[in-house]
Structure formats: structure tokens, C-alpha cells
Length: 387
Image (cartoon, rainbow, N blue to C red; front, side, top):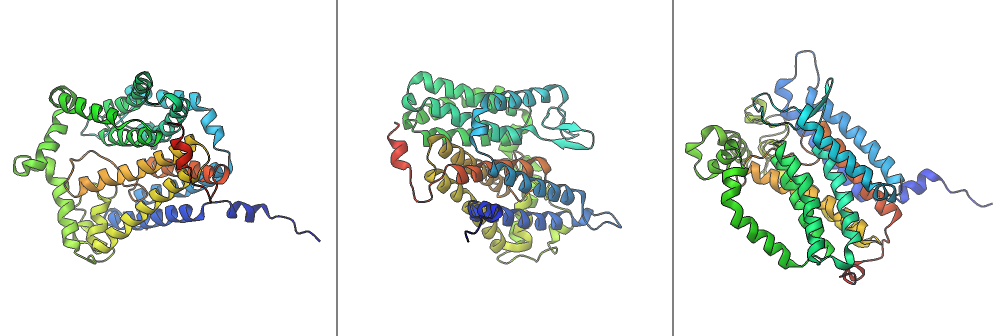
């Protein structure tokens, strides 16, 4: 008698369990650290902070969404690229009328509020940009190094990057630049174009400094060079790096960090969560967090290389660039190597929007693994033949 196939077992077998469990592990790690970072603020009679509860709900919802998206054919999303582009554009435009920001920053409009719920559109726009950019690059693959193609792709990348920067979210605008650069490189754009853009940006840097940056942004950059002259701007980073230094090799112990438990690390639950990890779990904990994020990024790149189309490779590499880019910018900020720009550490920082949206992207990569991936193939030769 022939045994019937179990759809649940088949679904599990077709899922990239390695990537899935790495992401869940990262979120579990992050939840524990956010719980510790917010322990001092828990109200009497409560077991958990609001930030922890919001993050837990976002992670749970994100995992469910990623499973649902992975069961769908990724082509549903690539074929709907005009709709995705329009929705992303409308979300960013809506910020200029209804966007809100921190109380002390009237110039920032990065959040949309729906009653008690706040949502940061730039997080979902990152995923939308990866999808639309992959389709654009796919359509131009045979003439990718034509100057008119480069101009089109440049405008495409500048629209979301510029809109996000204007709303005051400089951290996310940098991530868009990283994503675009990686996807252009993977698509086969000649290195000369990258050199040209770099030279142009260097030549325009005086104008960018004078007219493109707000005074607070300038002060945060100058604070890295002259910390004594800008004590307010460097305060957050000094507290963070002192906490990391106090953690040593093995840390002061979970829920026992002196800075963390005193609430002395500004934004310790989100932008500076790496400092919390460093203080309480030491170099060992920081290395473990970095290793998980690197493995997630490499796994997505591997999925892209084994996929059967250029667009799917670009989506996977774009997602990997988003994770790796945010990781490098966030940790560079925590280590006082980069100015404060307000960017989360993927999977680890608190925040509903970032945690929910990153799992939407993971679901897309899992869909590609399920529907467009030959585990035994390596498509580098195939893609090189396009250029």
C-alpha cells in the first residue's frame, strides 16, 4: 500500500531550516537582552516591560508571516513590483504630513501612528526596494553597463534614499546605499562606475557638509574627533563604550550589568543593545551575536548563488546586504567608530517595525529557497554570462 505524502512534513523538508532557526535563535537572544536592558523600567506588579512585550509580539507575528510568505511563490511579489513601489512611495510621502518623531526632534518625521501603535515605514520600504531593484536590474541585465541604464538605476536608488534622509532617518538612508551598491555589484556593474560615484561624492563633500547636513548631524561627526568639545553629542557613545569595556571577556552577568541595570546606557534597548550585550556577556556574548548575524547573511548569499535566476540572487544578496549593513553601522556607532545615526541591530534591538519587517524579508528568501533553488547548483557562471 502506497503511503500518502504528509504536506506538513514536505513543507518542513522544503524549508531552509538552517536559516530559519538561525533567525529564531537571534531573536531569542535579542529578546533576552532587551528584557535585561529594560528590567530597571518595569513597573511594580508587572513581569515584563512594554518594549519587551512589543518586541515579543513583533517577533511572533514576524515568524508566522515568514512561514506564510515562504509557502507562496516569490514571483507573486516580483510581478507586483509596480504596486509595491507605489505603496512604498505613498508611505514615505505620508510621513511628510502625518509623520512623527522624538519629542526633542521636531525636524524628524519617521513614524506613522495608528492610535497606540507606531510604525516606521522605512523598514518595510527596505524590503520593497530590494524587490523592485532586483526586477529593474533583471530587466537591464544585458545592457547593465550602458550609461543610460546606470542613470536609471541611480535615480531608482536615490528616490527612497533621499526620501528617507529628508524625514530624518539618516541611519536607514545609509542602509539603502549599502543595499543598492551590493546589488549593483552582484548584477555586474563595472567598478569604474563605483569609482566615479565615490569621486563625485568626495568632490561634493563640502557642499554636502554645508547644505546637506543639519547642525546636530555635523556635531555628532565632530564629536568623534573632538569629544571634549561636544559632550552632549558623544555622551551616548561614551556610556556605551564604557559599558562594553566594563564587561571584559565574559561580562558582568546577565541582568547584572552596572550600567545596564541602572538605566545608564541611553537607548540601551534598541540602538545601543550591543553595549548591553558587551557589558553583561562580555566579548564572548558580542562574538556570539556577531557570528549569528554573519551566518544569517552568508546563508542568504548561499541561497542566492544556488537560485536559478538573476533576480532571485539579487533579492537574497540585497537582504544579506541589509542585515550586514545595519550590523556594521550599528556596531560602528556603539564602538564610537561612526557617528550616532539611529539604526537598530537586526533581530537584537527592540522595536516592532524592524523585527516584523526583517522577517518579511526572511520569508521572501525562504520562498526563493523553496521555489527557485537548486541545492546542488552554483549559478555564478550563469550570471557571469549575462554580462
